[in-house]
Length: 413
Ligand SMILES: *Cc1c(COP(=O)(O)O)cnc(C)c1O
Image (cartoon, rainbow, N blue to C red):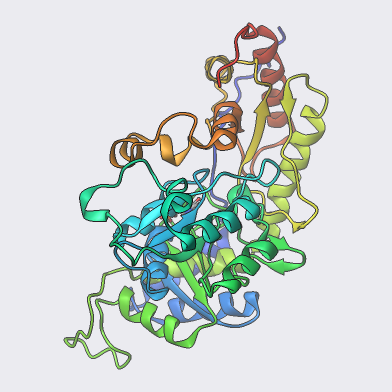
């Protein structure tokens, strides 16, 4: 095995791209006396709206906070149902629990890895019918304080997640939702800049959320954005993030239960500079994704990410390959780790997380497509600083790890 002779710098899973623009803008905040609630937030929100072609944008302290605000804005209440994907980051399902609603998982489409629209339609119809047909979509058990109130259980929201930067199949989801007047909340935390049939993610639902943790396509450190075209939802969101203060923002007048979900000026300045460079950031990620695709296209046992026909622009968040069912994914990860190549099992399904098993009685086998993908998926290091040399090295190590791993004789599941 040929190893590079010079010691290579460590390859990281993800890395933010921070330029002099960001440093300049953050410094300008630090040199001013406005560290919160100032011009950077206003500019960040205004430029965000401009990019999405209108509506309202409310910057908050995290994507998770934006999801919580979305639930309240859509009037999701205790005992309601929220239909969402088990193949996501845990925050999308947890948001329902924050308002004591019950997340109802529906299995995914194997191409986009997002909610399967026909299954969502069946779930909405069955749940509205009630009784045994509704029952098959519900978890085995619900914690006592979450038991849906008799006669009130309704699907209060549909929460599609655009995972890995690929839009969910929104057209049929929106049709299902429109039929019963159900709000659709897009979790676009992994898909800033992506388009579905030419339409930007975050502009199709009743509201949408974005997130700016440092591993996302653009970052504010910690931060998120709630967007909507509904004037009163936007007004409510501004109040919720600011301790329930009313529009006039009188300092000690609180009209509802609020939170401190504000984003500070330094973070907003960082976000503003990143937003202005977003297309370049996305192009750099696309270049890295293309680099992986050419290097891994003909590797036996590796399936590359699939792009649906409706995805008119992919916003590469992570680069996740699927390994053939007889390859021990965890052994491949261990072999890569031994070569100093980090990798991650993306995603480990939400319903199989210890908390969800314990609270809702979920078991292996409940969402077979999600589980099959969860077992076989492998996220490779992915960020704009990866060089061709890095990609050669990582791809070579992936091939080597697969060749070295014994193939499993019995398949799980
Ligand atoms: C990152 C992410 C979030 C949460 O964002 P935070 O800013 O970390 O709270 C929510 N949903 C999905 C799908 C995400 O990837």
